[in-house]
Image 1 (cartoon, rainbow, N blue to C red):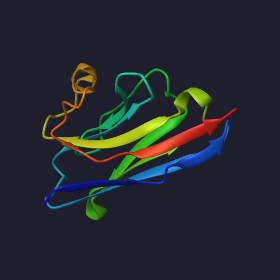
Image 2: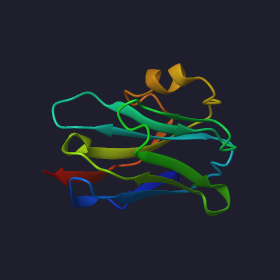
Image 3: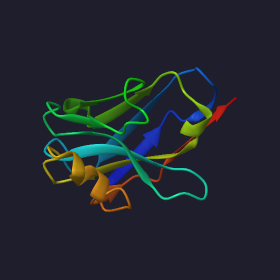
Image 4: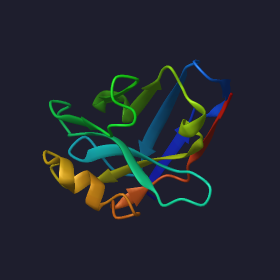
Length: 130
C-alpha cells in the first residue's frame, strides 16, 4: 500500500518557522518528482515547491520564494519543507505529493496542483497567527 504521510504542521506566530516532513512507503519514490502543495479554506489548491528525483532542479511559487526550502533524502524516503518567516497568508493544509514526471519544467507543477499528481498524502494543517 502506497502511503505519503506528512508531519510537522501546527500553530505558529507570524515570523516563526516550521519544518514539514513527508515520509513515503509502499514503493520506491527515489525516481519520482516530489512536491508540496497547499489549500487554504475556500481556495483552490496551489503549488508551493517541487523537487526532481535527483534534487538538482527545484521550483518555488513566487509567494514562498526566499522563505521556504524544499529538500529530499532518498535514502530515508523523505521530503522536507523548511518554512521560515511565516505569514498569516501561509495558513493552509499542506500536502505532499509524488509523480513520475521529470519535474524539470515549472509549468508541470502548476498544471498538477489541482490533485493532478499521482500520489498524495492526507495533509497537515499549518496555522500562522498574526
